[in-house]
Image (tube, rainbow, N blue to C red; front, side, top):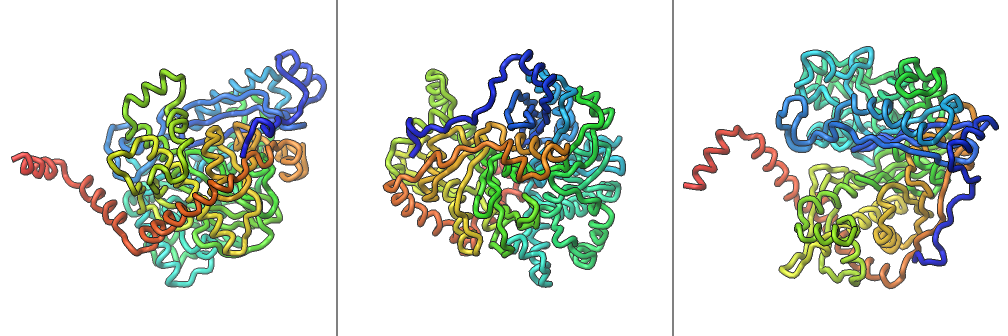
Length: 593
């Protein structure tokens, strides 16, 4: 376990604190890159020194429109269940605001910046016309929900995903196994099919169906280049081929041209330059026109070299609102329920594997916002703690299983290994003595159990997980990290950066600018990791084995078809919320009568 004697030591680097010192660095030939990480709720820019990866300054912008999951901001229109939209101009605002602010804070000469790299949540899709203008910015379409960005956690295309999976299995499509046997409702094809079937006029007007990771690079360079990472993991591009026109036509005759007309485009490899910074983007950022702009990437995958987790067997979990698990291997095989395996998907020369959990930090946030009594929030404020810190403090010293609960971490569906967003959350064992901190701890544990299920599935499939690394905002909760180590029975190494994806994007920018020959060597020089910070407590691990067995029983009972009550409940909810208002009012009047 983590103790005082083995606290991680920060990477040694020359002290650089004052703007005068950084100005001197510039005169002495130091070069810098910018990494920009576009998350679910905000975008952040980090200024990084090329020679050693030292992070000099950062700046963040919360998206002005946040996530639209209940109403459409432009009109106030109520959105159906499972929708999650964003406004693409928010992403440009990050470029205009966070990048120049970070450079100013760093105190460097912008002329010493040689490249910029970006990463994004995925699969996050932007429908555009030919020049990259999003459909929601086309006159007359601003009130149409399908004209907006479909965020990664837009799960309303589950019906389309089910049809894709059923047809692919029926036809024996070889690409299906590369995705663990199931395509997610979060991905490009399911969301695209939903757009066609629910707003065919918009679908017809759309000329490009663009990953946000590529759209923001388009805004920076004026060139549209699809990145190999999202094309492979989210766009069903395998061995140079997308699903066939015949397959798409069998889903819907009007979908036959989806690849040829909306998706297929030039593919850029990770670490390459997609282009150079345009005059307009230079004006936005204050950076030199013509510097390298790296090919886009996914927030999880770009983080691997930043955490020095690129060798076969080293699984990296990027833990935030959701968790994405990525790992390289020199072997190509099929892992049930994985999000995909892509040749060079993380690092050239290796097969990159991906799995994930759709809700982790989001589950904790939902619970404290909606289920924790006000007196707990007040007590936390009096102690100078966040509500998450306070609940952790109340629950962390109880014995494993002391709360008498077990939970399923499916509040945002299951990404791996069941790949089913019709599933939902569950807390079992509540009694009249169950306290809020008990449920909170059970939810923390449930996410650890979900990760163990993923690790066990990889191990059983011939892709052994030999080391476990963690990055992301949830690293701040030491108890949560220790719980993961105990549940997994593995040591946890942690990235030595609070901005792992942004650092990873900066590393790719350095390669795109020619400062390093490849991503591996750049990661060795610029990446940061603390090894084996948390190690398993044997007594706790033994107790968690028993609790995990209960989790696994519930996992299979509700998730593998033995009982589909969760799906029935979601279906009833959709039906009820889609009912005309006057019908609902009438039924309510009958009840009151």
